[in-house]
Image (cartoon, rainbow, N blue to C red; front, side, top):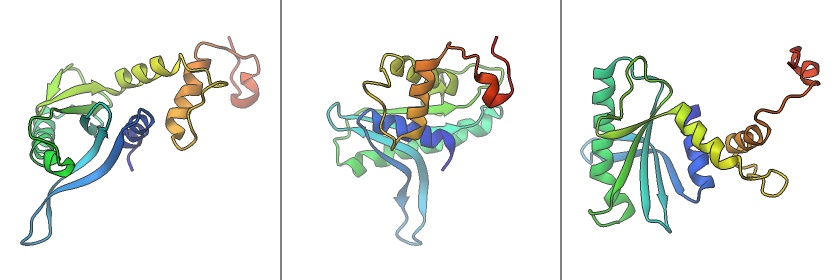
Length: 171
């Protein structure tokens, strides 16, 4: 599994969502193929919130990315209501999580909202920074989120013993 997909999966599970990853939709009965694969689909049963997240490393070739995300988000809109057995009026939030955006900062692509990894990580770190590891540690089943919790708690702290592990000198 790709790192970005794993991060998104862990974060949403930690937040109480039921998550499906690599979800194949649009079965073609004639040949057994599928129309599309969706990276992450998460459903929060209490808030009745559905979020469909597609990940990408960059937006440098905007034409190809636009077509790619449009196909994925269109398939999500077409099939997710059926999968969850939910009325068609349910809003499905669709997000393109992008490692970097190149030179152009876009707000949307293919009908979904663009979120940069740096912004996603900042939001996670912001939320985890208020949760003390000694009192409410993230469970070990989500190792990336747990690592981010430790990073949030120790962010900005310096140790003179840093050079013992990395060879670097603390400033």
